[in-house]
Length: 281
Ligand SMILES: Nc1ncnc2c1ncn2[C@@H]1O[C@H](COP(=O)(O)OP(=O)(O)OP(=O)(O)O)[C@@H](O)[C@H]1O
Ligand SMILES: [Mg+2]
Image (cartoon, rainbow, N blue to C red):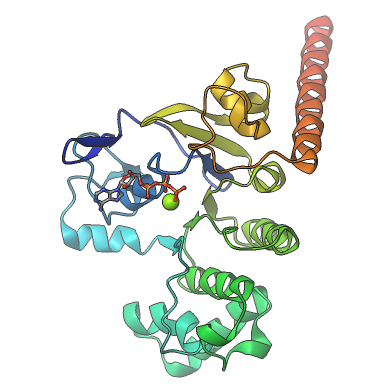
């Protein structure tokens, strides 16, 4: 797909397939069009050219009515959280059920409490968004994204504005809920440790193009300098500092080095297994 705003082409000729029931991460410097890509996929924006297929249905040329049906497969946690400030956490989480279903208040209560429990918010349901921490707002947004039992869940930078401890807590939560629900997760993030912890597949966007979308192991072993620089969070490389929102840190370097080693070990193991198979033949 291709998407421009006036003469500014934000995404050009982007093409990739998202594996079902796994977690995919989309990375890329700030302003490369990650949020725009997400909005095109969920139908809030329409591409100028190209196709988007959701579960075997092409959505770009779809009528509003059908698009509405497709959108119900999606749960979205937007970059800014997008909670309603005038509603308490309970009503925020329950909102999609009241808006899009005819469920009774009793059923809505059961589902809302179940999702609130999943994200650890049962004790805070009467508070308003202005009275809770950033991490709690993220978790409330997460619970709200879950109430419709979506098949696809999108997170636009779930880690922004959180400290590293809360980020790793949120990662654990994402992993646990992905395993529990079996849903397909698509996470937009700059956070390299998060990608190492939760992603099965990784896509890297750079200057309006998709450099590559592949399994995390394949990406870690790729020698393309942009992919290497992005996954290592290094300041030196083709991506300038102004484009790179990630700061280099020893912890990140360690984590990446370890992940690369593990990917290499797994590759060697696979080759060993292949050799063994050949010998058995
Ligand atoms: N509705 C719009 N109208 C015009 N330009 C837009 C619109 N939405 C986004 N853009 C432009 O598209 C480009 C990509 O924006 P986008 O928000 O997708 O970046 P991003 O990769 O999500 O960045 P970040 O990591 O900072 O969130 C930016 O140059 C932005 O100004
Ligand atoms: Mg964005």
